[in-house]
Image (cartoon, rainbow, N blue to C red; front, side, top):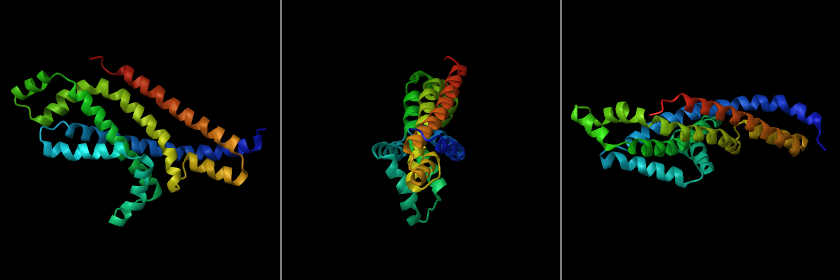
Length: 216
């Protein structure tokens, strides 16, 4: 039997927590896109000395659980003098994690463009980084955007893991309400609705973005 009093009590509390979730998703999403594109372009450099650190970073991030990465940023980095509060530790961990996946997307998309384009750019005196940024990257955008928006959506859902370091986002707020009133059905049901609405909104926005891209 659903306790509607708990439902109405939880709605504003979870709405407030959802703002924190959205803030984290926006900040970490911007970080992962910017850092991911940069890493992806660096991974296409001709110098192995430049490519190798990026390849190692991507391999480590993709090969370890996100929760462990969150713990590393929050608990381990302060030991090296790099301290964050819960909120910024979460943003940093999610941004660093997503950047590795976006880097692979960028590398694959840009790398799939005909080599003749790079050769033509070199023939008119363009440097390697200029070719990547001004010639190859714009042509790869249509391949990059769909998986990147999917990664941002995954990041938004992964904000729930930040409850493990006491970030008071949606999941942590829901856990607190459940511990006070022992109403898991009502609270976790509401949590699912909140996450669904946020993710659905992101999905609609991503589809609109994909539709306005040039169809090269």
